[in-house]
Length: 338
Image (cartoon, rainbow, N blue to C red; front, side):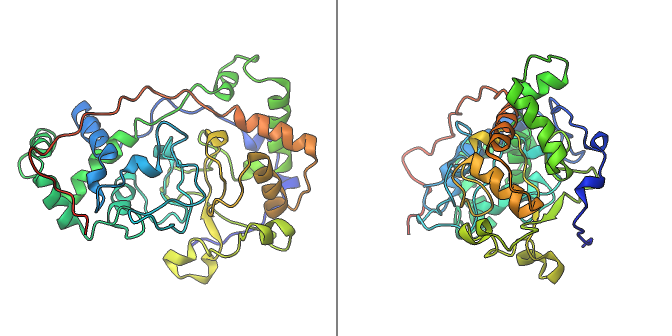
């Protein structure tokens, strides 16, 4: 794990913090090429609650595509109605992350997609052989997997590939910010323009850079940063930001305590509440917390309003998604409610 250094933001030139528009599509891995049939299979799996133990939750339950790609809860509920440990991150534009989950424990969408299915505080299936056996009892899935992947192809890997293929279509380009960068200088109002300048001058874009505002690189390492950098303040105490040790829970490396993958700013106005524990209900308060906890800056209220105006300008254009008709089971159920 690389070392983390608190950078003197005043020494960074503004030119180094260039802002770029969101691409229309993400990079596609060579071992999982996109096809219409695979995307449609992934969409069915994404909306199918039968991937959870008692048929209560689908991927869309916690990552609602009719909302901001999350569930607007502080933490999501499991198939039993129990509270999880962290807030659901948005699935919109997640294809641009080079690591997945708040703690970056998975490097691909394929690996991320299958994790919640067998997580006991999420969808709750006991193991993947059980998932595969359930899907094999649904004739429509047997037929569709065979068309996409070949005969006897229902497997953990192929479920992940199908879900990831669908998730790579969940891109929201053409935000007012993108239109501005592409040359429409009227796309941002004066407050958003002031906010765009402020996030660079204050130092926010040291971490929130790049087309997804998450500082991603192409080396597959993600962008991990310490949070909070300045823990001795009222916000950190009020919102319990030191209770979860972040990446340390995965690596058990002391250097990784309170290290997190930098989240995207894209569509952030739609994904309240904020932070890994969902403890902050409003975007303006989240801006104040970040100013103090990360930069040791007490932002003035007019600065907060302008930064919020800029963050709102990252809200993109959402593709039309029709809820799929799921393959039925005739005269029986495959769901185990025990």
